[in-house]
Length: 129
Length: 135
Length: 107
Image (cartoon, rainbow over all chains, first blue to last red; front, side, top):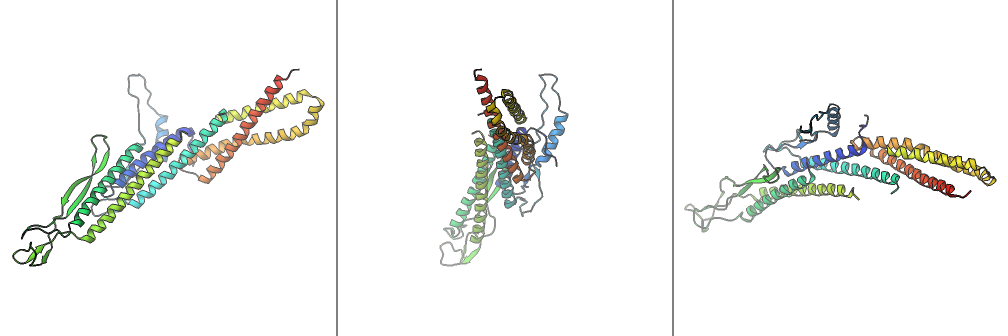
């Protein structure tokens, strides 16, 4: 698949925000591992977020008057419910699954920040500092 | 969602599990506590139920202990006429605490607690790494 | 991107240096020329790969940031690009320095 043609730093920032939001959703799942009728949630995949955003920015609303509120959409909002195992009290959180997802989020975060720092370093070097 | 909020959510999870562990400890400590007088009720087992409630101050959904209730199961009876709390037939009511169940519950609570702790550590790692990007 | 601008700057500076060298035309310069040509050629070839490596690294990084792509490919591509960039920057700095030295020489 073609990598998205957004600026590298912008893409990195968006991905970091998405990863932070995902960590929040997964933390909520783990905290509610014993709450009755709690269903495990997760974020929409990042590719879906990107696709929606490029589609959105192609037809963004234009602010014709400075008094108007700017049109906004938060493609990173909320989580969606997944299917999973059931406990007798209706709880659907599998701790192992959640911890695995958290580990994955952690390593993705590390990769993105490493790439970001490398590129910032290269720019600084090109500027002669 | 901010990473700070994630930290608070994990903290609330840990607190809820701590309360649960405290109740389990109470149950285990009192598993032989009978009444004092004949016919008096012994210690009744306590139960914990969780709920996710919206924290008024911050507006997030945190997990809290909704209620510390009582287990309505019947008290098992033990035949011991010489006991001070023995009733007319010589039976003593003993607490409805099953130590096996309590220990299993304790293990489950411990696992949930350490899972929440692990999540909190990972979240803190994410924050630290983001700050290090500034260097 | 800024990296390609810097690369083209370096290439232009190198060309300027070589033209001043060719225009000097004394015996000493002629004697040094074959050795200079070899060194200049080495630099030229080092510089040529920079832009394409930079593009490749950027594509790999974009893929990695959006969650696809092999991490090993990204690491090698970015390392190569960074090394090439460091070479380019070093060359640019030396060439500019040499140019300034030459311009300062009293005729």
